[in-house]
Structure formats: structure tokens, C-alpha cells
Image 1 (tube, rainbow, N blue to C red):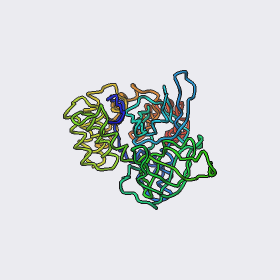
Image 2: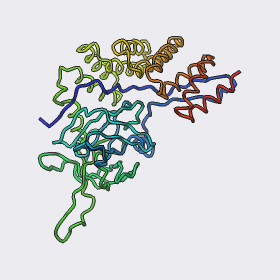
Image 3: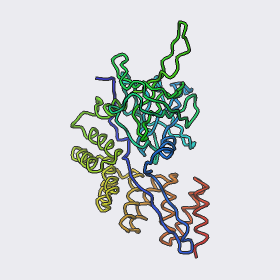
Image 4: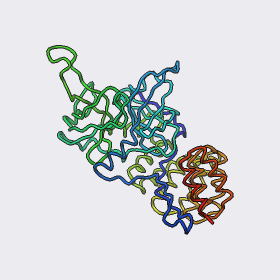
Length: 394
């Protein structure tokens, strides 16, 4: 068994699939709409490259003394801050932050699982609405010669992409299978993603081989290695604290199925987690997100209500409950759910933004004015847009 750990906490929230939500606010501004996008439909070529660039972060690691200990790369695998990097990037870390190319910073909450033998770490960052990679591929299907792309932050240079090929998909090293590839990587690339031509992660870039002595010292190039994504899937499914029969096991399996858009499988797994633990709020939220994706808004609403019942201090649960009420056109109840969400998280700009839109759409100018004032202090750009809409309302 690998050296693994999983605190088995409820820190990770669900993978929520709230697609584009558009509200036409006033008739005179029919050409204006505010679109909230939290799910990106993956494309090909430059589309997925840009999407994945947004999800790959610089990991800044701090030691117990509070000083910077090192830097590496990593990537988010869901919208609520679940993050993957190499275990060696986190060696000796007391804390860490993830910085995205957008400038957003996220603080690490906990280490969800770690395998030093496989050089993998799964971290939970304190984030909502984090951009995440287009999906996890299958490292067992890759062949020598396949084109691959390495995305990371070498030497802290964010949004760096390099292209190459698989040299050997099954290079054995110290009893471990590694993917050997030619896409250039550099110090700081460790923990980044190795992507196939479809934009899915097939490996976690971990290092390069350098000839350090002899006549060819320093001349070797492109002898680069990645940990196969199959090891990551195994780590999620088989950590010491997440054995089959444990609710967290089924929740994490549901999260994987959710990420792959296998909605029916995800629903079954989330339901199994709830069956084993009826107070598992994250599983209710995961199930609600699945039903949203399936278009069953009544079941979406039912499960968000359950999530707030078992975790009444979870602002995210109330936020998504409000959007579920909007899905079934119960705007008064959506208003009440938003009020609870913002009371729990007054500095959450997403809640203020969406609540203000609801108020504008339903003609509640007084509430909209207060929300826009609050939002302007949190995000001046969003505040200005909504203030303009409010000013144009009669």
C-alpha cells in the first residue's frame, strides 16, 4: 500500500454543474444580458488549451517559519478547489497557495490524500468557482508517438505550454511506471498537467533526467517524465481512509463520474454515499448538481434543500438552493435563500452578484441598490455593470 492519507473531512464541496444562467433584466435593455458561466463545454485545439491554461496554477509552498520554501505547478480538477500536484512539491510544506494566471489566489485548506511512492498529492483549496481541467484521460491507452502538451508554470512563468510526443508510455523506474515524453519542461513544472490531443489530462509532469557526468553531461534534452493519470485515479479510489464501504469512498467515486459527465453513474454513487451517511451535505450537493445537468429541477431542488438541512451554516448550499428555486420559477423562495447565503458570506461577490440580478429581474430596486453598493466594494467592474442596468430601469 502506498504512503497515503486522507483526513476524511467534508472540506471538498461538490462538483456543481451550473451552466450559463441568463437573465434579461429590463425590456429597454433587451440587448443586454448578464451571463454567469461556471461550466465550459470543452472543444478542441486552441479552445481546450486556453481552458486548461486557466486551470493550471503556480503552487507557492511555505515552510513552518512562514517563508517561501519552493514553487511548483498543479491543476484544479473541480470547481470547488480540489487540486492535484506532485508530492515532492509539497515536501516540508506547512501551508501553500495556488495562483492562477487570472491573478486569483487560493489558500490550501488541507491535504486530502498523498502518495509519496507515486509522487502525487491531492489538496483542497479554499475556493468556489475554480476553473478546472476538461477531464481525466486514460493513460493506459496512450502509445509511443502520440502528441502531448505540457502545461505548467516553469520558474513561475504562468500559462506555459510546450508540445511534444510520447517517447515511451511505460518507462519503468524504481518499480513505478512513468510516461516518458519530449515536450520541454523546466524546474517549477513539477505537478503540471500532461494533456492528450483531446485536452484531457493523461499524466502529471514530475521531472527530467539530466546526465550529470561524462562526455555528454548536460547535453541530454527532452528526457522528461510524468506520473500516469491512472495512479491519480487509484489514489482517489484507494486511500487508506477511503476504503469501499465508507461514504467518502462513494462520494469521491461520484466526483470522478461527475467530472466525466457520467451523470447516471454519479447519481448512483452520490446516493450510495447518502445511504451510508444521511448527513453528508457534499453528497447531497453533488446529487443536486447531477439532477441539474439532467434537467430534473425538482430533484435538484430537493437535494439542495437536504444539503441546507444537514449543514445550515454552508453559504454555498444556500447559494445553490437559491439558483435551484430560480430553475423552478419560485423567485420569492430564491430571494429568501439568497438572503441566508449572503448573511453567512457577506463578502462573497458571486452571491451578491447573482442576488442583485434576481432583484433587478423581479423589480426589487431597493434590494438591488443595496446589493450593488456592496458588490461595488468587492468587484468594481461587476458593480458598475449592474449599476448601469439599475440606472436604466424606469
